[in-house]
Amino acid sequence: MPWNDEFECMPVEQIQKFQLEKLKETVAWVSEKIPFYTEKFKEAGISADSINSIEDVSKLPVTVKNDLRDNYPFGLCAVPIEEVVRVHASSGTTGKPITGPYTADDLEQWTECMARNLWAAGIRPTDIVQNAYGHGLFTGGLGFHQGACKLGCAVVPTGAGMTERQITILKDFKSNVLLATPSYTLTIAERAEEMKVDIKSLPLRVGVFGAEPWTTQMRTEIENRMEIKAMEAYGLTELGGPGVAFDCEAQEGLHINEDHYLAEVVDPATFEPLPLGEKGELIFTSLQRRAMPMIRYRTKDITRLYREKCSCGRTMLKMEKLSGRTDDMLIISGVNVFPSQIEALLLEIDEVEPQYRLVVRKKGYLDQLTVQVEGKSEVYEAGDQKRHEVEGKISAHIKGMMGIGVEVELVEPKFIARSEGKALRVVDERPKQLR
Image (tube, rainbow, N blue to C red; front, top):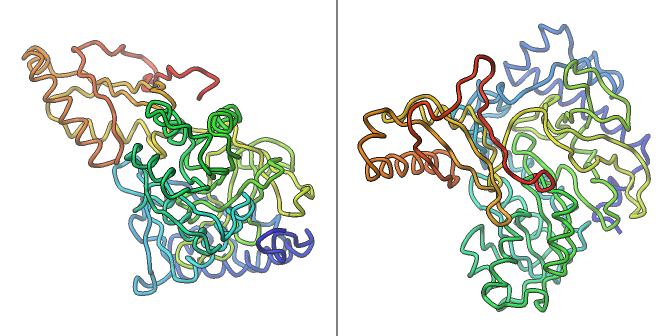
C-alpha cells in the first residue's frame, strides 16, 4: 500500500491533467515573479497561454546550472526573503554554492515526497532510523530527517563520519534502518569487520542510499555484506533535494513523484524531446514549488523514461537507473566536484603554476581525489618541508571552500603533460566496473 494512494496510484489521464494545470500555474508564477524567466519567456515569445498540453513544455527554454550561478544567491527566488524559512546549497564550479530557498509550503511538499520514498522502501513508524547523511547545507541529511519524522519513526541523526561511533550506535540503539551514501555504507561495513562486529547479526534490515551514482553491483555488495535490503533515493539540490524519484520493493525502475515534477528526456545535443523508452538527458520542471521553481532544468543525467503499472500498484512514470552524465563532473563523498572548481582554488595559491590534473582512485569503497599540481621552481626546489607545507595549504583551502578532503601532490615543473588541444584534466584510475 503506497503512502499516498491519491497521487501515487492516480490514473495516467488524471495525473497528466493535474500536471498541465500546475505547469500553467508555475509558468505564470515565474514569469511574474522572477525577472530571469520574464526575460527568457519574452525572448521566446511564450507565456502560460502557450501551454495547452504537457508536451508544450518543450516550447519553454531550458535552465542550466550556470543560470543559478549567474543569479547567486537569490536572483531566482520568486518570493520575498521574509517568506523563506530555509536555504540549502551545494557547491558550484566558481566556488559559490548553488542555493535553494524554501517556503514553509515547499518544506511540506519536500517532506511529503521523502515520506513516499521511505515508505516505499518498507520503512514504518515502529522503525529506528539512523541518518548518516551529512546535515547542514547539503539537502540529504535534513530531507531524510523530515521524511522519517513524517512517518513517525524514531530518528537518530548521527550525520556523516565518526564511523566507529556509527557502529556503536547501530549496536546499542538497535537501529534497523540506515540512511547514507552507498560508498559510506560500505565503509561502515568494512570498519565493522575491523572492529570484529558482526554487522549481519544486528537488527539493521534496510537502507536508503543516494547522493552519488552507484551501480547494481554496489547494491549487491551492500546487501551481501550487511544482509539488508538496499533501496535508492534520487534528487538534486536544484529541484529541492532527494525525493524526486525512488525505489519500491519491486526495484524495477525509480518512481517519479509526477505531481511535483514533470520529467522529459531529450537529445543532449539538440534538446529535442525523445519518446518514452529512448535514452537521453533527463530534464525536470517543478510543478508546485514556490520559492525557486525550476523550468526545464538540465540535470546532465542520462537515463530513459517508461510508463508501466508497477507490481507495487503505483502508476507513476518510471526512470531507469542512471547510466552516466553528459559532463565531466565528479562526485566525491556525495559532493559535486568540477575540474574548473579545483582550478579556481589552485589559482588562488601563489606557490603553484596553473598546471594540474585530478586523479580519481578507489580507496576502499570510497572515491579518493588526488590533486597533482606543479609547484613553482623555487618552491619545489626548496625541499620536502616546503613542499609538504604547500600541499597542506592547498588541501586546507579545498577543504574549507568545498568541504571535501583531497590528497595533494606538489609535483615538479613540467611534470604535467602539455596539450595542443583540450587539456586532460581528469585521470580516472578506478576499475571500470566500480565507476
